Image (cartoon, rainbow, N blue to C red; front, side, top):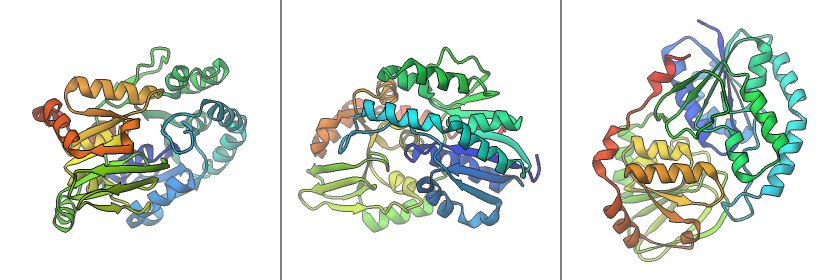
Length: 354
């Protein structure tokens, strides 16, 4: 496939889908002669443009909405089901137009393969182009939407699209999808490469630290941290206050290496999204997950990681005031350090499938 394009359709729901796609894209650009076409929302693509800037015109970007995903209630991590159904209905009504525009554009490029994480638009584009059509995911939206009780019409349409895949590459923690009858390949965790020199520099500059994120799509009123004297790194969408001698450092949305800040921290407190989990496990951090009821992926991820002894959890209501002494005790009592040593980056396993 030398000098051909691989087209990526990264979900425009949050940032975790984009960052794990960037791990694959970076590997492709550094080890092959492939050209990359990357479609996602302008918000996600603006991040990708910074992260991949050194590769210049080997990457072509397309700013489109690739997914709805989930829609949260204001100042909450809880799903707003009526608004989600409304947005999905509108989004799906425009699928044919969006797919036709993509196919018209890509027909002028030598596309060898379409990879979707896990955009229904990308899958339909791959089918119409008649090229290898690969999905990479830790869930399909069918299971998420069934769990939320969304309409059968919406779920059936998504299931029909997923059936067009030639291969589904399943990350560790994949939600069961028994009704999806396509070839599958199971792999482990991946994330963007850690930079040991950068991590050491962050530790030297900021000292002991914790990392708090609810995803870059979050918008929460306030989190208070008690009984902590180090640095508190946080991402956009969260307002954090702290008692004592703690210093709060809010990383700008354009910070392209948040994973290095995460790896430099002693404790990670995060929404139970797959991308942050992967970064925390691969960097062997103490992981505290926020249990938001009503989201299947979060619930399943938390239960499984607690069963493995590599994470603990707190409730979303606990975010109003977090006592770091209590968090440290929770970690000491429940996280099994040696269990973290089993997690290795599975990027090479993905490369073998492309």
